[in-house]
Image (tube, rainbow, N blue to C red; front, side):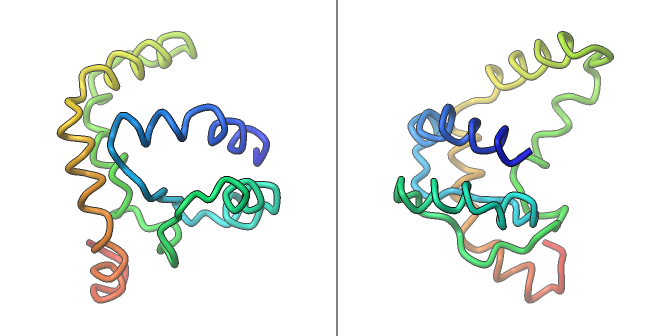
Length: 119
């Protein structure tokens, strides 16, 4: 799993930053990704700024969760249909929406801690 995650970071992170205008990476805090030494090393070597102390497994924080409703009506019963749905949905999201979601990130960890796990 960590190798797939690392490959995604290598292949897609720069493009995501360029498209959204983001400069800081939000890792979801899942231990399998945060602990992997190869991932940590790649992030350090590539000088990727990461939001520190991200609350792990908080369902209310990650912006991608807010985009889930786009998939509600999609038929994703096969891998190919899922890929097509993801591409359609991603291409339909206005850049401004992604920028707004990215801009909302800096305050979320503090809000979640203050509200004891929910935002």
